[in-house]
Image: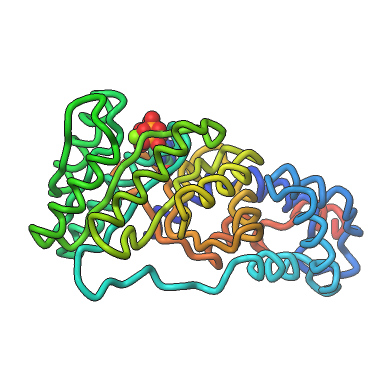
Length: 308
Ligand SMILES: Nc1nc2c(ncn2[C@@H]2O[C@H](COP(=O)(O)OP(=O)(O)OP(=O)(O)O)[C@@H](O)[C@H]2O)c(=O)[nH]1
Ligand SMILES: [Mg+2]
C-alpha cells in the first residue's frame, strides 16, 4: 500500500509543488506574505475550479498561524462522510461499471475482480461492451488473471441482454459478486445513454433491487469536463460512487475534490497504474496529504535566503 501511495503522491507532485511555492507552513516573521491571488491560480491550475478555489481560500485564510493546515482542513471538509459500500443480505452483490471512452473501466474491473477473489469471493463478470470483439477479449484476459468467470455473447449483441444473462447466472449459480462492464460512451450521445439506462433497468429485472452499486470510472486527467460527465451519468445510470483512475499520471488531483464537492458522491477507489494491484481504496485524508505539501517541502529556499 505504501508504494501505491507514493505513486499517487508522485502523480500529484505538480499540483503540490505549485502550492508549496506559494504557501508557507507556518506564517512566521521569516516567511513572505502569501499572495492569495497566486494561490487561487495554483488551485485552479490544479483543477479545483474557480468557485471551489475561492471557497477554499476563504477558509484557509482564517487559519492565520498555519494557512496550509487551514487549506487542508478546507479540502477535507469537501468530502462526504464515508459511507459503507452497499451490503446485500443475499448474494450476489451486483455492480455496474460506467463511464466515457477509455477512462479505465475494463482495467478497473480486472483490478476489482482480483481484489474480490483475494477476499475469497466468487466473481462473475458480464462483457457488456459488445461493440468490439477486442473489448471482450481484453476483459477475458483480466478475468482469467483474476480467477473469475465471465459471460459473453457475440460481437454486436444487445448489451442489456448480456447484462441480464450475467445477473441471472450470478443468481442461479450463487456467485458472491457480479460485475457488469459497459462500453465507453460520451455523455452527450443520447442513443448510447438511453442504451445504458436500459442496461440498468434490465439488471433490476434480473435481480430485484440491483444493481446495488453503480460506479462511474472517471479519468483523473479529464479536467473540468469530468463535472458534466458525472452529472449526466448520475442522471441516466444512477451512479452511487466514483472511481478516479490514472492518478499516477499527469492528473492534477483537484478534480477529485471538485467532484466530491459538487455531487457528494463517495469516491470508492483510485487507480494508480495499469497493473492488477494498482487500485487503492480512496481515503480523503491521505489524498489531501498527497495533494498538499508537507511542512518539510514548504518554501525551504525562501526561508534559507532570509536566514542566511
Ligand atoms: N496509468 C494508468 N493507466 C490506466 C489506469 N487505468 C487504466 N489505465 C489505462 O487506460 C487505458 C484504457 O483502459 P481501459 O480499461 O481499456 O478503459 P475503458 O474505460 O474500458 O475503455 P473503453 O471500454 O474503450 O471505453 C489502458 O491503456 C489502461 O492500461 C490507471 O490507473 N493508471
Ligand atoms: Mg472497456
